[in-house]
Image (cartoon, rainbow, N blue to C red; front, side):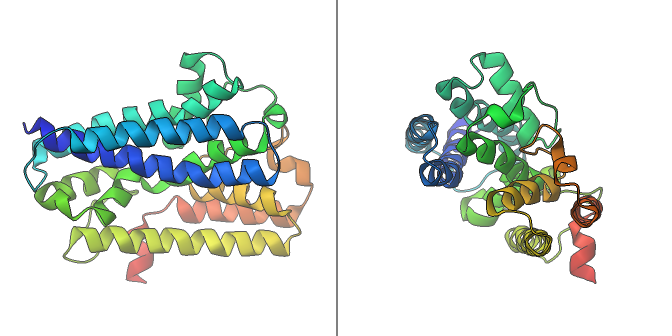
Length: 256
């Protein structure tokens, strides 16, 4: 196995994750939330370690199948580990194991949580917690396939492991183009749901959080009563409908 190329791709994954933490930092700053420093430190630490990994080893230009499998396994562990940093550094979840559990649950869209009082968490952390659903719903490694040409021959190995749905089909001949198409569909569905939630009168912060949890099919919310807090049949119907829509194989939407 070419360990250098595994380290390099994992480094890129961590740098990507650092970038994806930035919206949560902006939300924390906008709402003057006390968790902004924890998010800033998490971005810095994740980005620096990712940069070091991406530069520390020699590597071939292409990922082969063995390297692809290693990247899939180690990638999810590392992304979840560093994704738990904001919870730990902010003191919201002081236990490393609990914070890691929360992060894994987010990225894998399992939806399980160790937090009893969701509403006690600051807004930046709640945003990051739900955003992990959106990131993991399609698979952060599918996004990596879309943006990293160096994946080469191992790209399909990553793609078929990470793509939602039972069939690992390529939509178009090039795997990278297939990944990009899937993310476009994913983003369009997200925008449509956000628009419909806005029509239903859901506030700005709330509709973003619930769109992430719905499209990612994980279900994280920001209220202790979940969507029952809104007491709106329209909102309940929109969220339930999009949970069903997003639970299907996205390749089907492209073929329509």
